[in-house]
Length: 235
Image 1 (cartoon, rainbow, N blue to C red):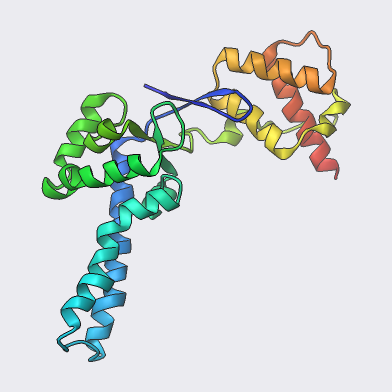
Image 2: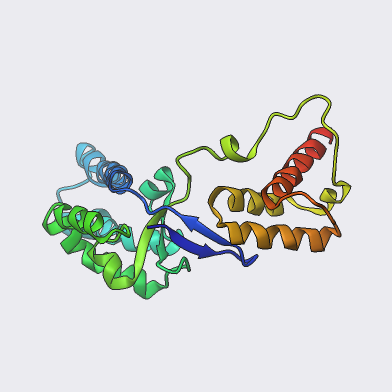
């Protein structure tokens, strides 16, 4: 089941839920971060003889263990739904309607992570994600969230970029009025948008640029991208 997300341009895009493998690998990368932190805060000070006082236990709890314990919550809250592992895997936590989760949703996901991935070593999380059909573990079900893949399996340039022939001729001069962000939205619509989203996007571009054309919706959008690419190559 795809997750639909409404952009600021009122374009409906569909994102694929992150796979179990994506989420497991992201978690493993986070564990690498944990290991590096423990080495930095415990192993190195211990080898240098900096530990051994009565305050060592407090140091280990506050400086070494507490950041790891709170890592998932603060990373997802402060990094817009991503931990370091999720950033590397290009996956992200979102609400089921595609909106940005609030601090309460992140907190609920974090609290139930103890059941999902800690107490039962991830078995509960794997079963829930596989059974839900929406990429949700227990924490996601409770918080109304899921984890989506930001990067499509097929590379974007394989879908929206074409090698322009040397004889390519610019069709719509008004494309100069568009920005890189506008073109990115068009590419996303071609990659993940519905046919209705493509139609509304094409209509909006025609209105803004004052274009009248007999081209089909997808042919028109691809021409806009090609024209923009052509102009960019001339600069």
